[in-house]
Length: 78
Image (cartoon, rainbow, N blue to C red):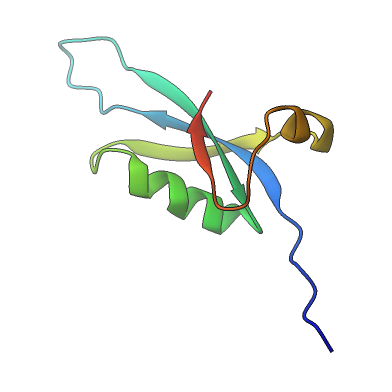
């Protein structure tokens, strides 16, 4: 029997630069297609700087995911 594909969800992840007091805190939001939130956070950590703070912020609808043509495993800034 063929294995069933895991459902992919588009998770939004906020990435903020560390507060060094000299400049305002920078914030970037990424979307990551993954099977669960932990994998999405891991994928975004791989593209973010080491000292950045990463936090799950939500999900995108299936309709928007289709319009953005997101693929499984893809990480993209939005």
